[in-house]
Length: 118
Image (cartoon, rainbow, N blue to C red):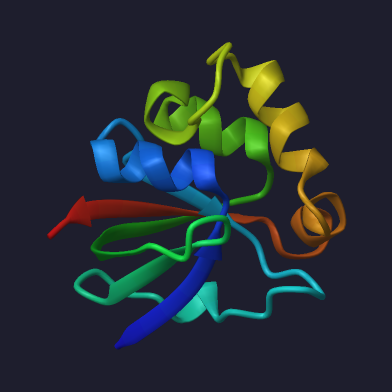
């Protein structure tokens, strides 16, 4: 399957540079993408919401976690976070600041999407 997702500029650039290898997503009232339907081998085209630039990646894996702390602990902050400091507490604060994420994670958990650059 092929999916298209909007993404902020900083994580877009980190994925493109290969320093962000895992994208954390949760369904929200603003983004109802079917993250629970993703499979390894699926393609995601990220669209930078600042520049409009596109980047297509292959899904390497999809893991589901009950919360951000569990995801960051298992996947590694260095693989998930695109901003500093790369700590679990900073990551939790960062994800909870995204529109709809705090509520979405409480209801749906969070998906760690492993990314492979094409």
